[in-house]
Image 1: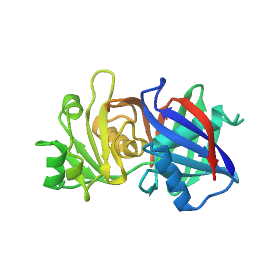
Image 2 (image 1 turned 180 degrees about the vertical axis):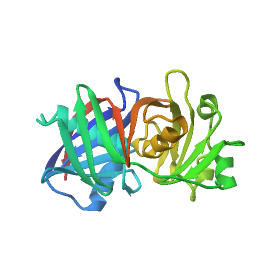
Image 3 (image 1 turned 30 degrees about the vertical axis):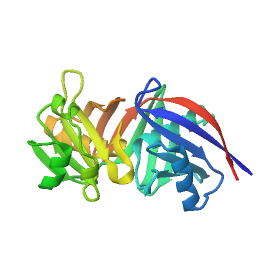
Image 4 (image 1 turned 90 degrees about the vertical axis):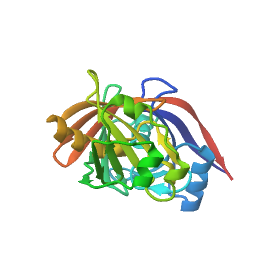
Length: 262
């Protein structure tokens, strides 16, 4: 029997029951892919992060309950929280080698900052069936990058959406819906990805890699505060630095224990 440490962390949150939960599992070496997927299914979170020690830092992979994904912001933040706070990591910066290249997380007190490549988008007409499934009858702009980005008129329109997730399958299943924010927030968003078993993601770092360049250009500023207005919700401090984006947030541990792998 193999014993593996595991944590459940609420990322982009200062309190439990908000932000985006992720399971984080520390490995000494990579297990077979099918076993990693089975473990993610057993955890039944939107993402399970697995990491191993590597030269100069760690290797990091992310799994939903259906597939391995090539980028996940909140599970990266959760993993950094575990390494900083539970594994007594001595440095102020962690390097992760991932399917999306080298990613860096730095800490300043309770706040951690993800350094990710910026996600580019291009103006494109969205499929009518996708808009119907989202419940969107009018939009200001639509762009396509690693996911669809649909801008609506205001925060309320984003908040009241009730998508038909079954109708979003099997085609255009990754959609970020966004709008300009209010006095406190520069912009708000929600993110839907039913095709990878995440109907609505509470707080989505990978979506903000697209949102930050988009809103930076529209608002004429490089530093912003964003709010993902899901039911759990979460705040993201955003900054555009050339072809990189920085996303800052906090995280809290909800549970820790051991996996007894037979």
